[in-house]
Image (cartoon, rainbow, N blue to C red; front, side, top):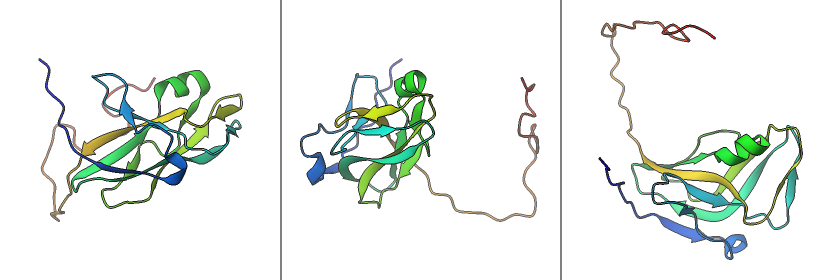
Length: 155
């Protein structure tokens, strides 16, 4: 059964160096993420092991209760070893600066980034804010305190 996605309206502003680039967009009807474009003035080359903040030429105003997650594009990761360093990067609802993508080249070859290249994807997601309830003891569970591989065999 298909469950329709929840639509949310988000204000977006093109910055002067991003005026000629398309707005982030879903590439297929079932896509969860929108592609972000590189708004570099001139091409840059990420050397193996190098990371750099890549501008997108946009700023957004998310509604309260939503965040934007910046995630790697699987094709860049698989084919070139290029990924988002702080994946997923979080854009908070009260941030109004330029959306930037911290890319790192984990591959073996230099990776060029050209103006308009699709460099990452952005997912809009609701979030919850926690209120702490300090207690002297937590309720029991079947798992207990087991963690860090305790539920399976290390391979």
